[in-house]
Amino acid sequence: MNLKTAEAKIQPSKQNRYIKSIKKNWDLYLLALPVILYFLIFKYFPMYGVQIAFKDFIASSGITGSPWIGFEHFKRFFDSYYFWRLIKNTLLIGLYQLVVGFPIPIILALLINEVRQKHSRKFVQTVTYAPHFLSTVVLVGMLVLFLSPDKGIVNHFIVLFGGEPISFMTTPEWFKSIYVFSGVWQEMGWSSIIYLAALSAIDPQLHDAAEVDGASKLRRIWHINLPGIKSTIIILLILHSGKILGVGFEKVFLMQNELNMNSSDVIATHVYRTGIIDAQYSYSAAVGLFESIINFIMLLMVNFISKKVNETSLW
Image: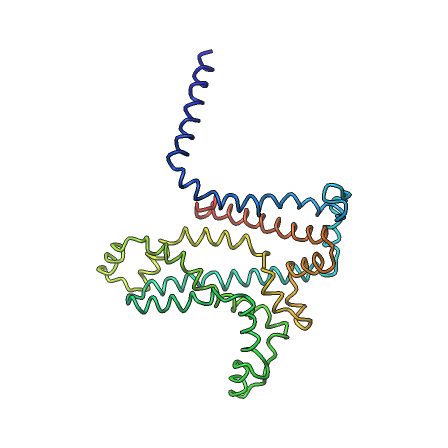
C-alpha cells in the first residue's frame, strides 16, 4: 500500500516537471513545431500508402478496397530481366559516390582551415560553395555543352593534343564517372561546411603546443585536426552508407539516353518508368520499398560496426 502511494506521488511530480519544462521553453518547442509537422505530414503519414506494394492497386477501389496479393510484385521484380542491371548500376554509382565524394569535402575543409588570410579564405569558400546553388537542370546543361563532341571545350583540348573527339554523354563507360565527379564538384564546398564547423571547435592551444614542439602543418593536421573531427566523419559516413542505393532520380534521368541506358538505368528511373509512365503503381511501390529496406539494413549494419569498433554511432 505504501509502495502504491509513493508511485502515485512520483508520477504527478514527473508530469509537473514536464509541463513546467514546456512552459519554460515554449519558444523552443514552437520553433521545432514546423519541423515536426513537416516530418509527420510528408514523411510518416504517406507511409500509410506503402501497403499498395502488397496489393493489386485499383484506383477506383482505393487502397483499402484493392485486393491483397502479398509478395507477388517483389517476386516479379526479382525475376525480371532488369533486376541485376538495376542493382549493379545503382550499387556501383552509390559506392563510387561514397569512395570518391565522401573524402573530398574533408580534405577541402582541412585545406580551407589552414588559410589564414581572411579575404583569401572567403574567396575560396565562395567559389566552392557557389555550385551547390545551381539547379540540376543547369548542371546537366553545362555537362552537355562542355562535353559535346563537336563544340565542347573538353573535346577541343583532346583534339588539340592529337586525340579523337569522345562522345562522353552517349558512351556507357563514361556515365558513372561524369555523374559522380560532377556531383563532387557541385557539392564538395557545401558539404565541407559541417567539417569546418567541427574544426573551429578544436582548441587552438593544441596547435600552439604542437608548433612549439616542432610539428609541421601536415603532422598537426594528422594528429590534431583529424582526431578532432573523427566523430563527425564517422556519423556522416554512417548516414552516407544508408543512402548507397538511394541514387537520386533527377540528375540520372536528365543524363540518361538510349545509348547509355546499360550504365545509367537505376532503381529510381525504373520506378519512374513503371510507376508514372506505365501506371503500375503497386509494382513501382514494391521496388521503391525494396530499395528503402536495403538502405535501412545497410544503415543498421554500418552503425553497429561503427559502435563496436569506434564507440561512435547514431544511437
